[in-house]
Amino acid sequence: MTDDDLEHRDIEAALETRRELGARYDAELVEGFAERIERAVDRRVAERVGLEQYRAATVAGAGPRQLALGIVSLVAFIPISIALGVNGQFLALLVTLAGIVAINVAHAWQSRRPG
Image (cartoon, rainbow, N blue to C red; front, side):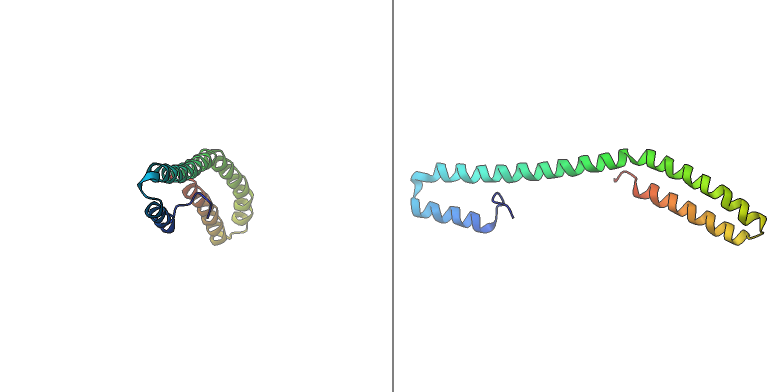
């Protein structure tokens, strides 16, 4: 917790201070409490904006990564398919193809824009 965090005990302390000091200091107490609320709201908004910017940057970079993964997958599958196809290991060829497709689908799904 930081100094700016507002908790139930902070509200209680402000109310108790008002009772002790009387109505003369109401404006100062309210102003100080309002400043703490504003700082807390500003901090939370900044955190949320930072998170949204991070997510947007992650999604924006997913396109080139997906393209690179697709190219590498294709380049890797060509010699694997030749080796397995020549030796008649078609089941192994299908399992290998399914694995490569699953990796590409999982990456594309993980990189999609939320919402």
